[in-house]
Amino acid sequence: MNANASALLDASAAPPLVNASRFRAAHAGDWERLDEILTRIEKGSLGRLSDDDILALPGLYRTTLSSLSVARDTSLDRALVAYLEQLSTRAYFQIYGVRTSAWRQLGRFFARDWAIAVQGLWKETLVALLLTLASGAVAWLLIAKDPSWFYGIIPQQLANGRDPTASVEALRGTLYERHQDLLGTFATFLFTHNSQIAIFAFALGFAFAVPTVLLVIYNGLTVGAFLEVFAAKGLGWNALGWLFIHGTTEIFAICISAAAGMRIGLAIAFPGRESRTDAAVRAGRSAALAMAGTVVMLAVAGLLEGVGRQTIVDDNARYAIGGAMLLGWCLFFYLPRGRSA
Image 1 (cartoon, helix red, strand yellow):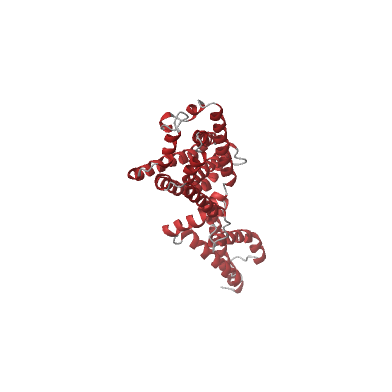
Image 2: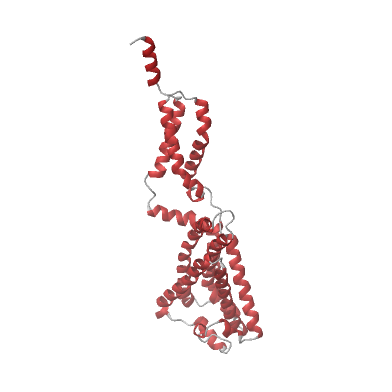
């Protein structure tokens, strides 16, 4: 074989030359985005990743592997090869690595994720609370002017004798009677009833949030109607304490559930540039996270209503417990959460 043929053979066997500067310029954007996403995941901020980032992660990983292969084959500088190897390893661990245990995920949910989801719904939660207060005031004024309005708001079986015709003694008895043998059953019933209200407020949000708003208004009308009946007999302060011990937790939970339903309904009604399905899915992630935790709140409310309210008959104690619960929930949900390490 002559020298010219040997040179041609060596040239054909050599790897193609790649300009390092152009190679970096063409792919640096993908590497930097992958690095940023991985850094956020490693710092515990997975819940704050956008849908686009989550969907792009596998593609960016494959692109980085391809870049690493080219860098190795074309003998680019060792620093670049080392960087791409490290980046690929980090991405592999996050995509295919061992997942967090169920207990750790549960701890993260209560320590951080639930509160952040509720914080994100603060506007809708405020709207639900204002609707509850406004509808309660409307019911109060209507019944104060014409007691017959009570029967149009409260079904007879729900009133259970607590209506405008009841005597002061009968109404007072409903506030302070003890039925400890029925406390467990009563607490279970109330938990189930309140959970149904919260679930319906959330689930019906898909219908442009209209049923959710109507359910919140009706709940407020019910509260206002009952309070007016007791207030008309001089038992307003007592009835409010009777409600306060569990109502601060229960109404807060229902408002959060309604807020989650509103978020989904508004996303469907006003999807912006997204399709309605995509908008609903995006809104539903954080809304469902907030809704999931309200089961705990409703369980606490059921215990306070079924047990605490019947064993604690001192008005001041009822107000103190209800106020402490409200303060505790507000601190839990709305204290700032920094980035977790």
